[in-house]
Length: 138
Image (cartoon, rainbow, N blue to C red; front, side, top):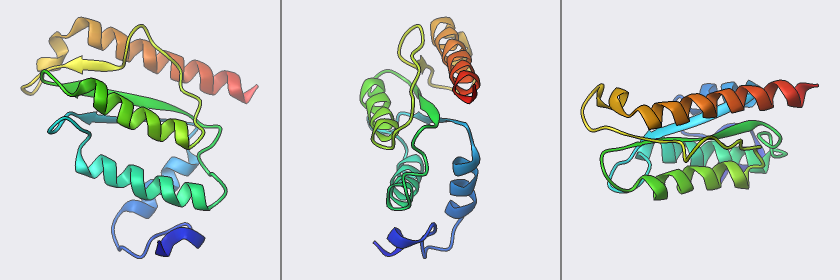
């Protein structure tokens, strides 16, 4: 791949500014709705390209804190959750748990607000991300 020896790819889009922000971040949460049983193509492209650049440039994401968050209408959520989780694992992130998988359900705009368990899980996941970031600094 062309970008293996430098921290950018030749495709002229917004990847490099995003990659730079990801590199500077202490914690990263990648979230996606489920589209056809998988993460969105945009998120997958970000994961593939930023992940490859990280691996080929000294594992720049290793030691950061992060994890997945998924919203589904009815199915595909566990595969999508695992798909994003594996990315964090391969790149050497520390991943905190929550009170359940970081998944919420909803179809129409705003409907996910009715999924109290999903919102509680996401809230606890965010708290655990912050806890790990804070405690890894000390």
